[in-house]
Image (cartoon, rainbow, N blue to C red; front, side, top):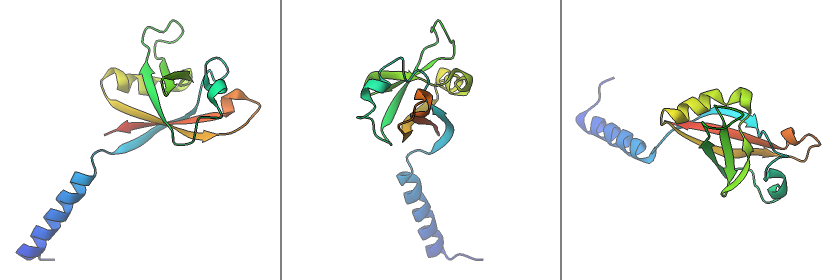
Length: 125
C-alpha cells in the first residue's frame, strides 16, 4: 500500500495525538486479598471503602516480620499489607524505583476476613 504525502502526514499526526493522550500505560501485575484485614483499620472503615478507590502502597524494608513488606493505605489509614507470599515482585519493583499503583478491586461481606477486600496492583510503564 502506497501512502500519499498527505495521508502519511495525517497518519503521523493521528499517532502523535494518540501518544500524547496515552500519558502512561498500566499493567495489572497482581490481584490479591488484603492481609491483616482484622488486625488494622480495614474492618473499621469497611463501609466507607468503595470499589475503585485508589490505595497507597508503602514499602517497609525494615519490617520486623517481612523484609518484603508492602503496606496498604487508604486515605492515609493503614488497612493492612500485600500478602507475604505474593509481595516479592511488587517490593522489588518499588525498591528499584518503579512506579506502582493499587486500587480496591472487590469488596464483599464474608465470614473470612481474608476474603473481604481484593486489591489490584498495577505497574505503571
